[in-house]
Amino acid sequence: MPSVPHPGFLLQRTGCFRIAFAVLLGSLSGVLLHAETKNVQLLDLLRALKMAPNTQVIAARQGFVLHDLQIGMTGAKAQAGDQVTALVSLFSLDGKLRPTQWIIRLRLTEKSGADSPQAQTTDVIAYTNTGDSFTFRSDLSHMDLETLGPIPDKAKPDLQLKVKRHSIFVRTDFLCLNLTGAARVMAKIHDSSSPISLSAGPRSFPADEVEAGRKQLASAKLTSDEVRSCVGSLPALSQFLDIVRSTPDLQGILLQVLDKPSIIDVFRHGSSEALNFNFVGGGKSDGRDLFWDDGRTTDFCVLAFYLEIFNKPALSVVLYVTPPTPPLEVSAGVVGIVAFPPKNLNKVVVVRVLSSAPGGNPIQTILSAH
Image (cartoon, rainbow, N blue to C red; front, side):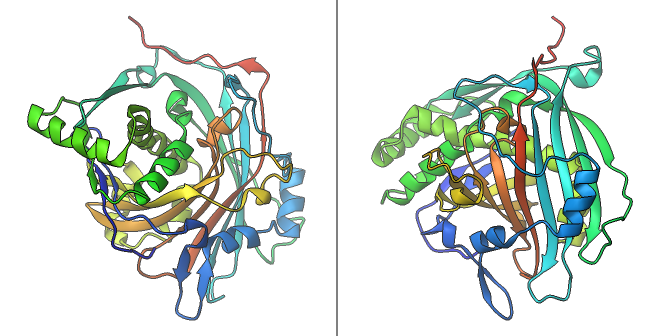
């Protein structure tokens, strides 16, 4: 992911949080992946991702819904049964690694086992150096994760595969934090000539730091709601990353494009002190037509970041996001992903959401006992 010198925007974690908004690219819909033989626009990789005929036959036989990406109405509530189905492809730009595909499905389910130690819930409070404090609720729900694959490009349609399943607790309120808000703020920062240093943590900041932070905030003309959007992107992405790590095979797919084999265990287990999101761009994006052709003007944005481990880039990630109204809250509003190693830019993972559907019953979150 190329870097262009530009005023930075930093949100640091002390204890629970760390996120950095560092360098904004001019037009993220045209971000280039530089391979040895050619430059590739990342949005073109998403456009080119098609379900192989054998994948379609195998997935349909297992009952996966492979079309109809539904957008919930504003104000819709999460329901048990809300689900998102996506196509995942791993390949190399030089053609030496032939495409392999997987189908994944994420689905909210009814609560169970409220007495489980995993079901304890808390609220996360983040204080900023601008004098703001924000509370993010972290009620828990169950989510079922399913994977069908791997399906090689030359697999026969009668290939018999078992669906791999796993169930986890997720913080649905974090998934509902709107990543398009953070993308819009990053675009606004790009238009500002003033550098911004924004820090957040579990404790309030000294008065002199707050005063300096407020001056920077005023010069960039950012509102408190916009700051909250940026701060809220971390719990949203952290929960999304937990889903990725827990989905059968999906973590293993991403491990193949990590730059640092020696830090694989950190990625697997998600050490809160070792993993950071370092944003390098955000804003509106082309590409909505890949998912919907109804002419609606629903926000469609892009967020580009490095997933850093021990402060070193380990994975370059570009997310294509839309407001996470149910049923799309299951994926935090993420409908497309392009991920690749920051240095050896050849292997690529591309994910495209194929369908989403609402469930039938209001979701019941798991609350801690008082």
